[in-house]
Length: 182
Image (tube, rainbow, N blue to C red; front, side, top):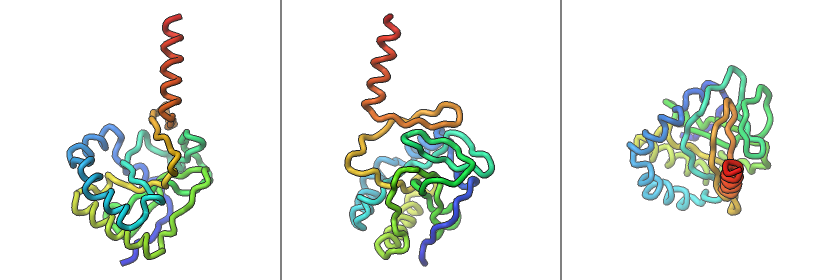
């Protein structure tokens, strides 16, 4: 059974667990152990570790009808028009043969060739691991940001997700501390 890529639907994003619920579910599944024991060997075994990353599926707010969460230089905003390329995907809820895009980015993202045998074999096994671990709807796939990716700290302001690098967070905290002292 081939896994196909479906069209984007805002209802798919809105069906994700809220961030405050996704973390405890991850913990209850012993998500860190799943990552170490199952996901790392899976990604490496199929040679996709430089194409894809693992994501904790969650939302911070609901999208309105017709909106798409789109990352623009580290800030994800709901847009009413189509721009960018898919950057986050999940296997469909009851239909594990459907990969659905959930978020987008204007970055020059190299889209995986989902129909290639390498990716199809990976997706089949990924779906099985999710099923076996009870992690459907918890883990998704993200575009691999590259070796130079420093990581990020995400926070939400209204209906906007802001992603700061660790250095930016450190600089912001230092500035806040200096302002507090004056």
